[in-house]
Length: 400
Ligand code: PMP
Image (cartoon, rainbow, N blue to C red):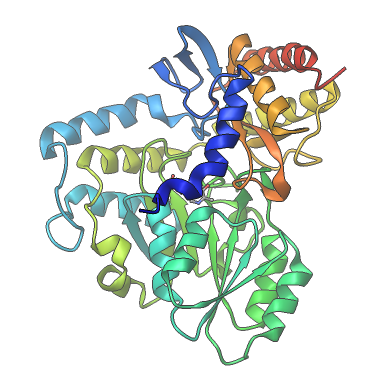
């Protein structure tokens, strides 16, 4: 018998070697208690959270929690079925209406996760003979959506407008084309030049899908994302998003003005062949989305936090993923996995949780400490965070 697990041996060895250095496993942290969007108890110790996607801090919003409790009591704990059979409750309609209002778009379709939204939309709309042109640093769910469908895949260099244009020009003019972009790329926290990319894509007759998972709720005057911020939302054919980040719950969605959009409810397999979200989840999502429409003050504070943390880390001598703060994600580049893990652990010992990210999730084989800020982080917490980075960075020898 060939052990089907032998393919995992290199990863098992790498992991064992890392743990043999005495470092805690950075990929199995338990939050024993969650006190607020920014504080949890980890290993029995109060810890500042700087590694969640709770950008707008909605997880503990009183109205959001009340809506979830009410739906749980009135509609029960789950739907037990697919949206197209027995899984569409009033709450699913309400959250889709909230999304249409949030984006001022004609159609909204809710999936059980953002991962499934990408899987479903990409694999369904780009078929045999069509082309998907995507940024090489695209999220796994975008790649998996491509893999699941029958279209030809063409990748271009990250955020490179010329490379995108060149690839597009090589494709048959009459072929169907879908250009897939992200607003914010989650590893380095950098923003896409959507305006120029959309221009060259439209010139080549392509349709555009933008995943705004990390920008929805925060970036843009109304929190609609990077496309709104760059004034090109009306040229985007499909916006993909998630409820697991700024919205503060779980779920995924696609919004669009395409006149034939509703047919997707019958042909999109990751929508049809899975159970719909529980009533409590769609109720929390709808309430959160409606509140995010009036979140300008929170957005402004989150920008302040982002600028303060970015500037502070730079001044301490850390190497960052972007020259300027571009989003709520600030990536601190580590020299290697061993020192990255040591720094991660030193920060945890200081009482700070960040994300350790490493290949293959990261671009260019980088090991990163990813910091993601929340609108609920106070200015004092950001000062504390900088103090923790200074202490841990000196201890591990990352900074002088
Ligand atoms: N797209 C991007 C760009 C993401 O970063 C993520 C999650 N990290 C997803 C989609 C998937 O979202 P979800 O967690 O809702 O499955």
